[in-house]
Image 1 (cartoon, rainbow, N blue to C red):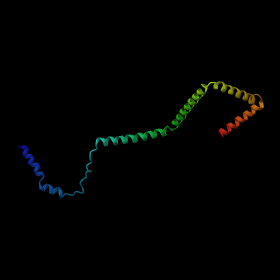
Image 2 (cartoon, one colour):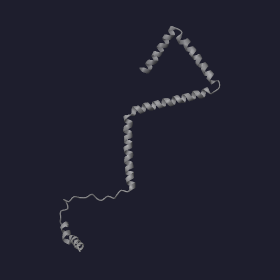
Image 3 (cartoon, helix red, strand yellow):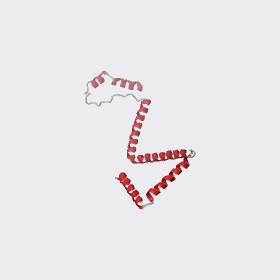
Image 4 (cartoon, helix red, strand yellow):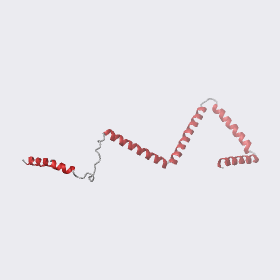
Length: 143
């Protein structure tokens, strides 16, 4: 019984008088609600989160690289030096495996060392000439 009375009271609120009172009021001063947005699908949510993650990751990587740029350059040069040394050693090892190449190259080295000693190190004047030549090379490189 009470529920019927309550329902009638609620039905009375939507009477024509109540509607007329709302229509006659000033709508300019009432707060406006934002238009309803469609709920994001799970796919849209995931793609938006991934795009945000990748953007933040790339920005962090760029900032990290800029902060430690000199260290990365030194590491790159060091790595290049190690790789170059390994390649040179591999080539020399391959040359040493060729028959008679090792003794011939050793003979060439002995002959050149003997010539250098007799040419530059035996006399004082030639030693001074060698020192002057070394100084001129240093000046060319160092300025």
